[in-house]
Structures are given as structure tokens and as C-alpha cells.
Image (cartoon, rainbow, N blue to C red; front, side, top):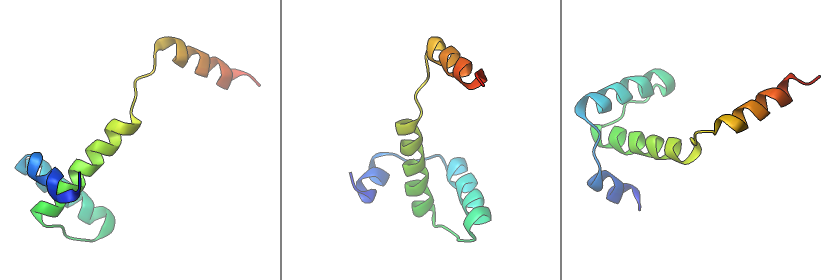
Length: 70
């Protein structure tokens, strides 16, 4: 999907858009329109969904044990 299709299919809440615009401005000193904030916010959510995967307890314990070894 391209940007236009994504923004037509899904919409962030008004509060989420307003919050995103504030955070974006604080970080980048760029003011976004509501549509730009909606698109960028949805892109961020999709990115997080792609990279976030819960780890099984066994993997967490193995990782912790490897980090503790000198």
C-alpha cells in the first residue's frame, strides 16, 4: 500500500494525531498537517509491529545467561 491508501483505510484518533504532532514538532521542529501526522503515525505503528516480537521465557533466560558470562 502506498501512503494515500493507508491513510484512507485507517485513521488515528484526533487525540493521537494531536499528540503525535506535538512530539514530532519537539523532535524535528517541523509542523505536520493532520493528514501528514496520521500517515506518519500509522507508518510508525506498522514499523513497531514489524520489529516487536515477544520472546518466549526460555529465550529470555538463555539470553540473560549469555550476558552474565565473563
